[in-house]
Length: 398
Image (cartoon, rainbow, N blue to C red; front, side, top):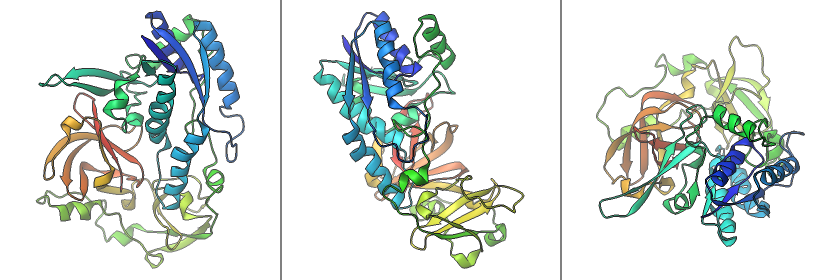
């Protein structure tokens, strides 16, 4: 069996390649270059030339062919342009999820198949299982990785059955320390390499500088909303009322503010540069507790903030996903309109799974949390899991 490994120069993909080679597979290494422009990137963070050099040394050490592929044009169109578009609308996209769906398991997968590969393997901490339904049809299960601290199944929540059919995750059953140990014992050049951080294939970035390539800076007011504005109601919660679509719509609608609701305490360089729940980047002092972004208004170019991590404006008990944004990794488990179902949900990477009830209507899906959630951010992905850790589906938060 011929397997193409997406060799990034990091320790995880290196060990994935090593394990497949030791299992007797015909393994080839493929290194992707997906970005050229350094505007907004922080110097010294994961330069792709260094990554390529390490990846080539790893391939040589393991004894597998090395291939280089430039997917920067595709990455720019499918991931970066999407980022600019979403930020321009006041939403916060997740480029890592898009990168996996559009690049690693689409453009890269197609290139690997053209080289004669049967499968593509990556260094993701997740697992895949193949099961058959009562009709004998094969279904592919995407499962959380064994290492709870490194589980990356969330980043793959937009994959399809067709993509999973060609995917392999060799280190999904290992912990990070085990991966480091295997790399060190094998003398791999990437054994001590730090984990990559920042934007997928770009590295750490100064987000406002990066976004100003296409989104102009525009000064506006920072308005503080005080707790007294909420009239003592505190954090909104579902109070056990009969669940209707109107109720769920009300519970999932963020607070709407106007400047007269609070006090102007500073200025910013553009509301589209900020995201719900953000703490850093305001540079406004004079408060006992940190300020958090609780809302942005693109029309008036206003950023609303609240003091303290328990500020009521940070919390919502419910979120909505438009009907066209719902994705089922397992189409055979797709819900019907009018149906509700219990799942565990996360709305960001590394967030502990939350107990919820999902409700499907013609207008889309509502996710009602057992406990109100902090920083529900439009543009991010909500992924729902079964009790045994299978990712069933996902959707973009409206």
